Length: 127
Image (cartoon, rainbow, N blue to C red):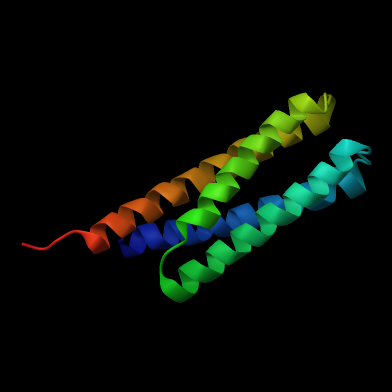
């Protein structure tokens, strides 16, 4: 994995950590979302933030973001999109969930792909 790809993966993981914090704090404590969506935002936001922070740390320390954490973040992003429809959100809470979910899924998916590519490069036989 090139230095440029490692840097991009590191910052995308950091962005996911911030998006997770956003999902954890803003809908719950600023907009006053309640019910099942309250718990969903707390739990999923915390998980996204933790996985993103771990990915950032791993990229800084080991030079590559783990595929499993990035893939899990991508799935959590997809769930965040689906949750907007499952909990029948409306207005700003709906669009917040959709936009955050799309970004988390895209960033996590890219990092999972980049991690797979890096693994293939390091395990490829040399001629």
